[in-house]
Length: 106
Image 1 (cartoon, one colour):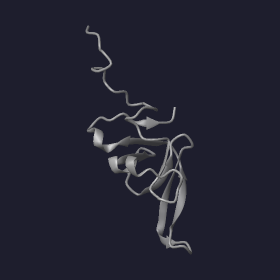
Image 2: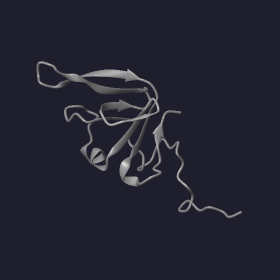
Image 3: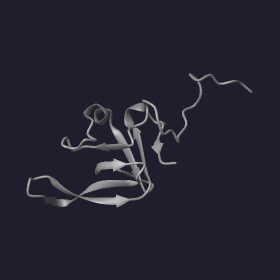
C-alpha cells in the first residue's frame, strides 16, 4: 500500500468548495447579481435530475433548483421568460478534463 500525498491524491467527486468547483449559485444573465463572466468562460457543466443539461439559465445547488427558458416567450423588456425546476443539481468546470470535481448538495 502506498501513501498518497495531496498532489497525487485522486480528486473526490463530492467536492463542495475550492477553486476547482463552480459556485453554489450562478447565472448567465449579465443583469443578475450571480453573474460571473470569468467563471462562465471556463465552461460549467450542469447535471439536473441525473441528466446533463445545456439549456440552464441559472442554478442554485444548495437550494436545489435550476431556471430554464420557457420556449421563445419574452417579457416586456425583451428578456426570456424562465421556469424554475426543482431537484438535485450538480455542477463542474468542463475545462478540467474527464473526471473533474463536482459541486453538489450534501
